[in-house]
Amino acid sequence: MKTRMLRNLEVSAIGYGCMGFNHGYGAGPDKNDAIQLIRQSFDLGCTFYDTAEGYGMGSNEELVGEALKPFREKTVLATKFFLNSFEGGKQLNSNIRQHLEHSLKRLQTDYVDLYYLHRVNKDIPIEDVALCMGEFIREGKMREWRQARYTEEEIRLGQTSTPRSAIRSEYANRERMFEKDVIPACAALGIGFVPFSPLASGFLSGKAKAAQEHQGDDVRRVISRFDTENVQANQPLIDFLTDFATSKGATPAQISLAWMLHKENFIVPIPGMRRIERLKENLGAAIITLSKEEYDSLEKGLSTIAIHGNRTDEAIARLHELA
Ligand SMILES: NC(=O)c1ccc[n+]([C@@H]2O[C@H](COP(=O)([O-])OP(=O)(O)OC[C@H]3O[C@@H](n4cnc5c(N)ncnc54)[C@H](OP(=O)(O)O)[C@@H]3O)[C@@H](O)[C@H]2O)c1
Image (tube, rainbow, N blue to C red; front, top):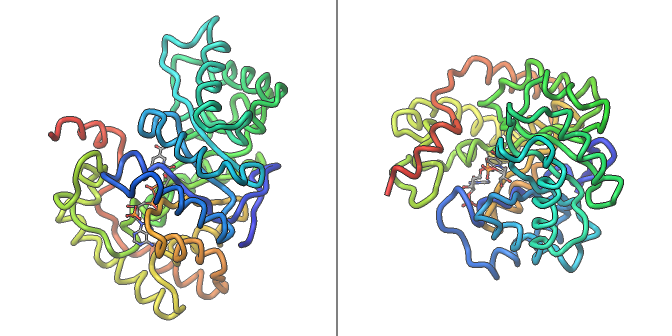
């Protein structure tokens, strides 16, 4: 497996987004099978794992912690916390400390490699959060901190007191808004960029099923890219990726990952996978190379295809309205 640097941390070129085992994609494999799969990913060369306190109300951290326990120190483990507005002010430091201590306990470890602020809270200055993070880094409870879903301006704020190692946001060849300023800001500041949902929730594999075929807490029930008409309207994108992939002896999912790996050497996608064949397929994208001509023709083709539907927090908030 090839590796990349997220500032000072060396990680496998493709990481493992573990959320789907407990959150956001309906029922998954049972706990023992999930642990087995995560351990198989390590055997296949993956060393970068992503979870959050909010996934399955802590159960995803427990799962990942148990799976990684035999080789924890050989991995780069990322988790996230969310701050409510009432947690700011004088108590900010002790509130973040409490989130961190709970995560460490569930993860069965005494440090996390990367600790993310999961969402922007406009009521809590990012500079104050950065100062707290610096203290926890000095205490050895975390190695680096990062932010999720930030604007270029927010990335620059707080970078002087405690520099971040990475920014994490949705990014795929059909969700490209961060190419304008966030990714260039990461390049300028030496920060890694970790795309989540790099396969657009599986859509880019070409095997997507429409919204009504999903159950439970599955976000594909409500995000508009899985509306029946949008699945049909986006077929030209899948056809294009499939043709390109066939010419390379690869799959559309692999080409979608290889495309972003080719863009910048500080981009490290974290696809979500709950089956061994998908694990092998996606990790296999790390060895696909694109010549300049191939990359240019991929970009040219992608630029001419209209994209229908997206994935928003507002749409996901509607999930609870569905019984
Ligand atoms: N901060 C945030 O707001 C946020 C939001 C979303 C995600 N994330 C993070 O990002 C990680 C990845 O996000 P994601 O799970 O949405 O990523 P994704 O890889 O874009 O989508 C995962 C979905 O695609 C399917 N899939 C993956 N590879 C496939 C392949 N080769 N062929 C066919 N289907 C395939 C998976 O199916 P199976 O599960 O059935 O294998 C799963 O349903 C999460 O685990 C989480 O850590 C963060």
